[in-house]
Image (cartoon, rainbow, N blue to C red; front, side):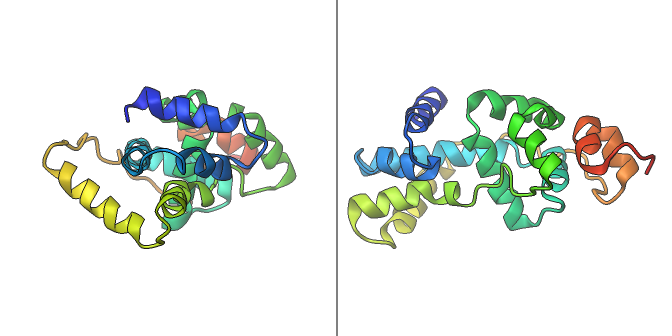
Length: 188
């Protein structure tokens, strides 16, 4: 599944009245098993592309802190936002300060916006529904990724420059709009 097909599938699921992860499971559970694995593969590649310190810093500000597991949920949530917002955040994580849900959540003190643990498991739940075996997805996923390990190159970009998320002054400098929403306008 290429990137275009992935985003089309996600947009089709967004037309449902159901929560996005449930709608994606419904959409994927009627396609061939190989296509579910291809969806997960593209999802993983998109998440890997935003596995960077600057994006993690955005998650830290939005979530009032962010563990490893929390960052996994955040990157899943970035993908779940859809192509436009995903690409904006990938280009400039500080752009998330303009997302309406982020602005509303910041004003309300809600630290769960964007973090989407359930979306992480949409493909595995769809595969389980299709095959009828809860372990089958992980076995198939391992074989799928092993088969591609030698044919795909890593992007090699790394995580970028590490910095102290607890340093308010640094966060204000690197992510000024998100810092203003979550740290206020103070000097440090």
